[in-house]
Length: 291
Length: 269
Image (cartoon, rainbow over all chains, first blue to last red; front, side, top):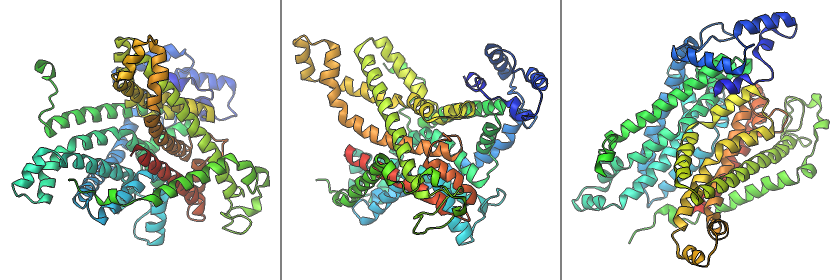
């Protein structure tokens, strides 16, 4: 699908490679070299054939294989995404638990208020604000770079903020639902403290919806990576694909999009597996035998 | 008896006032943009480039000497136009497909469930990335693409609600009177769906506003349209010299999404 979408383009890469002054013949020669002169069907077949042998083609601008470019940039995005998700997970679950623990106090509405703001704040606005406040105003953190731990703080905050808010909301809602369950009353009747019950009994049972939400946030994360990497000049896949789009570097865009799709599949598979560990009642294989 | 939580006890009226007030403000700006705009595009003056807040230009001027306030007002119009039409289209398509699927065969229904699941799994930003590279995304193309990637939510909602409502007695009595199933769906059942559809629409609008702004911010959105995201995109290169250029449009987007979310939450409750 990507190939078809990308190749029906009015302006093509040949123009941007050779510039306006190249002669018509020169352009045709390059087109033939890149296989752009064949029909869409042929191109598609050739691409699928290459795909199965692990060949994603060669970037038009970098003159290197797409796969090696993706490999090179992938680690940057992975680090950023990993830290953002873990940050969001711990802060979000923590805030969710606190919101429920303090549910009769004024502090809880403060948490609710922050999560409302967190959901609504666009990360392309938060990023520049963070830069202005922490780098320019307080001179605490560097604007861009990716080598030291300090470089991670602002991008991770930018990328994780909306996730934190979503996870907080989901955790507290899920906890509240489980609070009314019978086993909670049993645990309290046994004499366990309310915080202990919350952390050991209720939280464990509330993880399923939270996990679902996290895995569904893949597209939020992807968009977040695009925006964050472009704000902080982060060397990752997001900035790679944006650059490729600007240069009309089709093979590179295709490769990246395919790779994102692949990651998405992996994430959903991983969530399904984690479900089984979280809740042994869910079984991946035996479903049919029960009925 | 269950004690009410603090959050449920507090009245939160000011939140609702704020959100409706801000939405009205944006709406007025969008509808009467032609009368409200202090400076038109033709009035741009390069000598005013990057000027700060002043009495002539309340919010200053951008890189090309155009008045920021005017651009924001025009941006409200395009933003609202875009998001409302996308939400209108998705709801329409959703209602149509959702009711067709419940009305007719079970085979279609299974196929529908599979299809929507697959399509929802596909991050729409990927489709937009592909398309953004091949055509200059105009407003109309953007509306079509966003509708195409967004109709599954409303459609699934309509299907679920229709199946739920179909068990009520008035449906049975309607059947007994010999009402055709088509009429039954559109006259008896669909009116039940207005409240939940309204809620999803409100959240839908805020989602589309955010998507459009993000695309424009990345430089992939419509280029020839006044848009808040595009303003931020342009203002980013002079973030340190003139922070207001990118921060003010961002604040507007933030407040708009915040008000829509508050309104949606209240409608849901």
